[in-house]
Image (cartoon, rainbow, N blue to C red; front, top):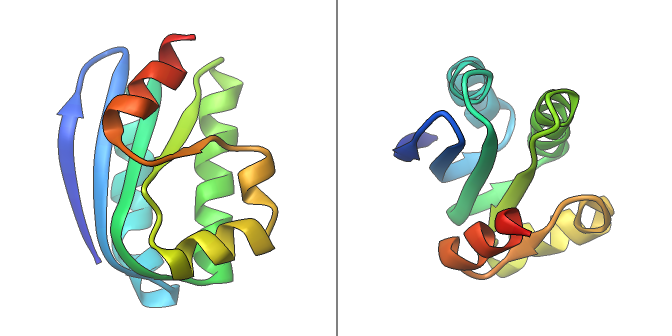
Length: 112
């Protein structure tokens, strides 16, 4: 699992994940991702290159969303592939987190 910081300011972090967000992938990125997002305002997670999302990956997304919510910040997910999108919908995560098709759309959601 790769984690790339695309943009990071005091108000926004945009992070792209690549690979499988399964138990191994979560172990590889959880500490770094949590540390990065604990220092910023809103967050955009680009899931375009995530090929698999397990229940541990869903737990990680929920944990991050809660972390941000405690600071009155938001999490937006971007461009989940069909398999990942299905996992997000199956877990009803799409009902509590916005999921959009592109980073610019995510920025627009956060601006409202």
